[in-house]
Length: 107
Ligand SMILES: [Ca+2]
Ligand SMILES: [Ca+2]
Image (tube, rainbow, N blue to C red; front, side, top):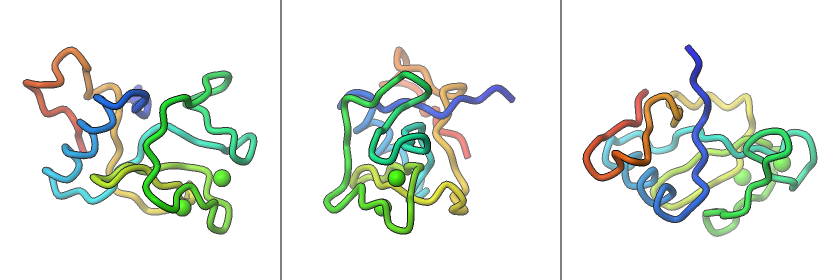
């Protein structure tokens, strides 16, 4: 399946994702921001820097080299890419134009 992890690059998408994750009882889901290539240089993908951010208090802390991110109701956190996070927020299931009417986060 061609499922690209979602960008949460504005407040609307960010708060929608956070509340959707909470409403579905998922806790945390993966999304697309990472700093795998350059520590602290957050990107959505190669050459696509993160401008809007929604970090929780105390994040990102790069605790034992965390280069991937999850989003929850309280915001973003950096986590190890090898963390077992069951759910992902993928663009395949998400369309900003249907934000208000459709619930599109899939496990
Ligand atoms: Ca990092
Ligand atoms: Ca962290």
